[in-house]
Amino acid sequence: MRINTRLSAAVAGVAVLGLSLAACSSDDSGSDSGSGEAGGSGGDASQVEVFTWWASGSEKAGLDALVGVFNEQNPDTEFVNGAVAGGAGSAAKDLLQSRLQTNDPPDTFQAHAGAELQDYISAGQIEDVSDLYDEFGLRDAFPADLIERLTVDDKIYSVPSNIHRANVVWANPTVLSDAGLDPEATYESMGDWFDALDAVKDSGKTALSVATTWTQVNLLETVLLSDLGPDGYSGLWDGTTDWAGADVTQALEDFEKLMSYTNTDRDGLDWPDATQQVIDGQAGFNVMGDWAEAAFEEAGSEAGTDYVYFPVPGTDGMFDFLADSFTLPVGAPHPGGAKNWLETVGSAEGQAAFNKAKGSIPANTDADTSDFSDYQQTAIESFGQDTIVSSLAHGAAVPVATLNAISDATSKFTTGASDIATYQSDLGAAVNG
Ligand code: GAL
Image 1 (tube, protein in one colour):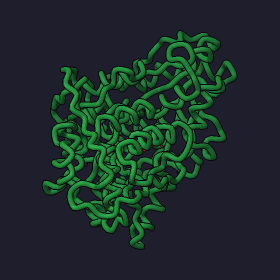
Image 2 (spheres, helix red, strand yellow):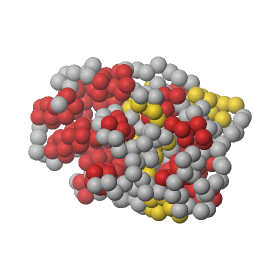
Image 3 (tube, helix red, strand yellow):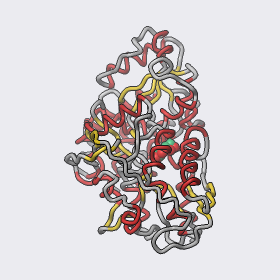
């Protein structure tokens, strides 16, 4: 199956992607040269150190699926796993920065399309790989606006591996039924959802599971999106929405209320632990990007019976977007190995295997998605018709330094060291300097 690209209008400035995929014709033209040598200028292809944060569980299973295709396509290049544990790159990004600054880059590293990638481009830490797009026949394979997010001054700086959605609620139908709720219900607004959260809380379960700071920022961005809408949310990143506004105050009050329903051990947990609480029936709801789909699948859970999912209340019709991509760092010791990796990452075969296991949808529109899960089919459909906005917690909306400042302000707030007024002004200062 080939998924064609339909461009839709960007909602507001560079912070918003106007991406969409729509179905479909039947032409499969994936790239699978299978060469052990790198294309183009070549270079040492004996091995490739691949730096990611997909170190365990369902994320490692996704990486393993990609490595399986890589090994078939490149039998003469040894894959060296440079994964560093910590969801959303919470530990990996700092370590990567110190390696890049001491001229000790991996052969390739994971980076989000959008503002985060711009950081590496501006610092001169990654190479232009546009010639590889020509060589591998990738120019037409990715949505045009996604390529735009990877491009600076007509140069393309990485190869995208996937598209994830960050505004999804995952829920345990048994916990909901036991609390007297309809497990198939969805909720129009934060206010409606609070009633359901109260019911789960009253039943003695954790109403909403969450984990360490970055997952709280992921939750925050979905509340901002719900309360401000796509234009207002996107305006937070391009300066057209006032951080001091009453609508932002309202969103922060809703965020505070949501946090009051969460597990108290949250700061010592990472995302798989919080999602596991829903899988195990300890918690009713969890807000997480759709890498959670892979965790439910890995646990053998059946969609509809063991878990249900829906857009965060108030964000139906909005797709909170992020994409992982892979780079060629300046001074990579095995550039030939890196180029072979990039070829597999971009290929229809690599993307089909990787994304099926990862819970995401392919960025390469030639990838066969016919055997993807029910959830993933809904994500493909939503991506084709929803308003696309850029994820805050996952490098699409703001540079790393801004995200770090937002994370610090959020941690300060959720550990009780600041009130809403201080949090609101801290967030404004984080974005506007
Ligand atoms: C995101 C990344 C996803 C997933 C998630 C949790 O930043 O883009 O692929 O790995 O973190 O670790």
